[in-house]
Image (cartoon, rainbow, N blue to C red; front, side, top):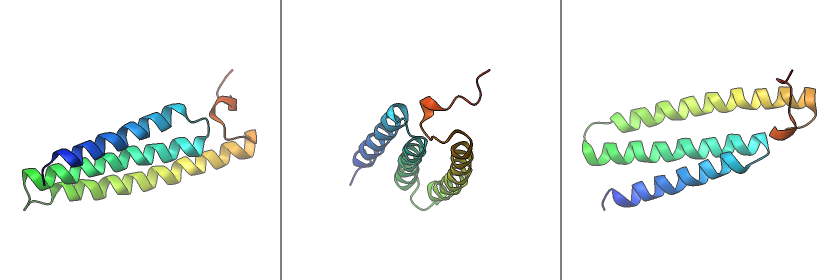
Length: 101
């Protein structure tokens, strides 16, 4: 198997994630789209690591690091969304104007 199917899958997931992040009005939907983007990056990291240097586990190590960062950012993002929901009673991004003067 070649590298091309993995890169196509990664590009497809990345495109779906970008589309979801740009078109969603719901803050939780945007967070899920960002997670899809990070999963696409993980697929590319592991695929390139496997095809460039199969005995070295650098891509897998970076993927685990990205998974940890994604979990931390999801926890912080969800905490921010819950805090905004308590104040604004909405999680729609276009209705939240807490930072405006």
